[in-house]
Image (cartoon, rainbow, N blue to C red; front, side, top):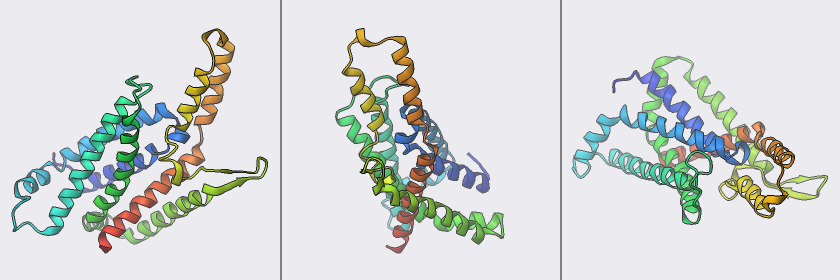
Length: 251
């Protein structure tokens, strides 16, 4: 699939942003999380298709001594990232509540969380190993590439750090600690959904009426729409990915 490098760079950047946003499930709600997950899978498949030549060529030569170590490392990281995407996708389908409506938890839930966490690390390594290529593409498209780097770096890190600082924000009215940053979202990834489920289970069918359902749905929608949290959480994950991309280059 022959695609202009500039279009590839924009496409990959959009996929990266969507990947960060999908981790904001506690702020966006489960339905949006499932929809966005499927969209990201579509992006990921297209990403593989326009890089298929590199994948095929390296696969054929992976055990060849003439192939440099960096390329072999890139291939291994990419293979692990593909594996994590597959595990996250299958486990996501198994615990789906709205689109596929399977909703089997147990081991699938933990596989989804672990594979999602490893995807952040491996995505950072993937980007870090391709930084030179990314840099060359951006430099060829604009002379203001340094300004773009600085702006994005400051923007992502400032919002991400702000989100982390809010992790132990103390509520003055309730005098209790709130956890609303990126640090606790792997642990609480299904918090909203589970709390709503348990509340439903505590009521019998007789206790439900249309008014009660309407009120609960309205409250649930309000709970989901936390745009500021989405921005903070997403920036936190983008910051983590950038950090891992820098770490792999230092190593």
